[in-house]
Image (cartoon, rainbow, N blue to C red; front, side, top):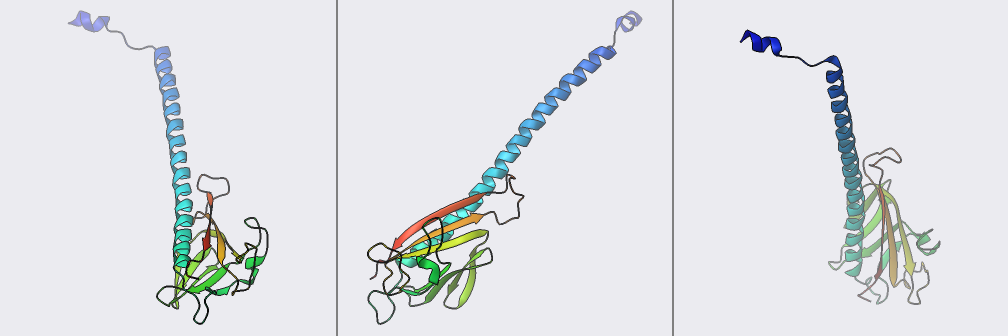
Length: 191
């Protein structure tokens, strides 16, 4: 038994240093992979957030507008109010209004407007924040001939563009700093 114990050798300092260096490289590679995965997740989650927010807001606006009823006493006028800038600029790059109002199929007034970075929906006098993180809301109004027009009696369709960003404050260029742009064109059905 004593002989077995005497023949046992330990690790040399050089062998231990090599093992520690190899383990260090492996841990560094593992940390880098984990960090890249985390950044990919953060980027994807922020991108999904801004795209969903923009799409939800646009879908709600489009659905409400498609069901809008003509103003009482008119057969061609749907909008009850519109930002005077709805006939300005070059769609979809510049100009456009930032609010509009109409009457829905239940004869309730609906208004979409911006307040800071919130897109608000005012329904029958009650204001709700539809989504936050909105960079811009632009609305262009078109007459039956397809040209920009701000006369409420002539407007037959609208082009809506919503630009969103993450609702949480994110440093520019970071994975959480994502932006989305959605747009939709609505021709009024009930006139």
